[in-house]
Image (cartoon, rainbow, N blue to C red):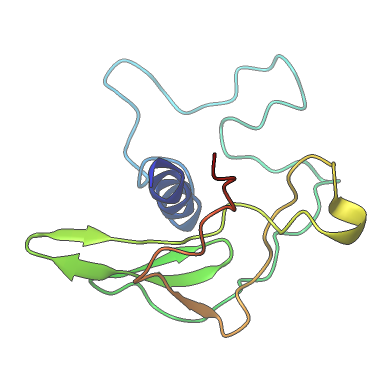
Length: 128
């Protein structure tokens, strides 16, 4: 469950641009380039040789219970006053050439929207 929540929170940061919603700099600080490392783009500048941003996986809009992530829209379920998103994959399945490799990005959801209203299958467990 913590992994699913982490994925949703990361997705929200990605969808919001990862800058805290565009909040202004705290008083006394400015958002200006101070020279230094030319590869440092913390002020929002994009280097000339930067790859283009990826195409969005879904054109869905965020609504109550639906969040937009890098892999597409994810729809959760409301229980009382709490929303939950269950079974959200955090990486591509480690099959074939990906076996024993570091996690790879999941990619886009097939339908563009993932219904995250139930937990996925559990890992096999050996019985004693």
